[in-house]
Amino acid sequence: MEGKKAALLALASVAVALIIAQLIGHIYFRERPFAFHEVNLLVDRSSDASFPSDHSTFSFAIAGIVWLQNRRAGWLSLTLAAVIALSRVFIGTHYPLDVIGGALLGLGTGLLIWQFRSRLDPITTFIISIARKIRLA
Image (cartoon, rainbow, N blue to C red):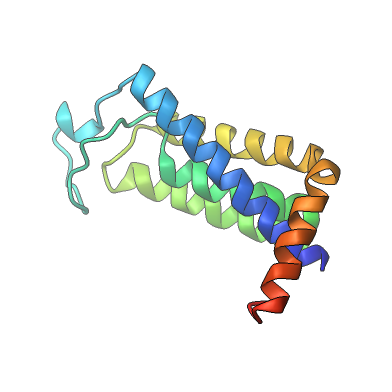
């Protein structure tokens, strides 16, 4: 049951973090590196804001919750999130500060959600009970 609750907390963390990232991107629009520099772009061009990186935000929001729930799995998750973040710089879609900002946003949101987990417990318990009734969990 605790693992399922942690998964729901991770989902909540991702949702909140990505909403905040979108708001930041609309308030402070930063062009992507390929708009100003010659890069060997390995993916399609994106027209949304470069800061903060959604991929970093998403992956660190999950990794943070995993780390808080289980340190061993958390270190692996944080390592994978860092690889995702570095790959976004390597493929030419983000500046280093974009992925650092996304990582901090994701981790911060995960920590905030984790701090409120006892208040969210009735919601997570309800969702898990519904999932059991329809045989999803």
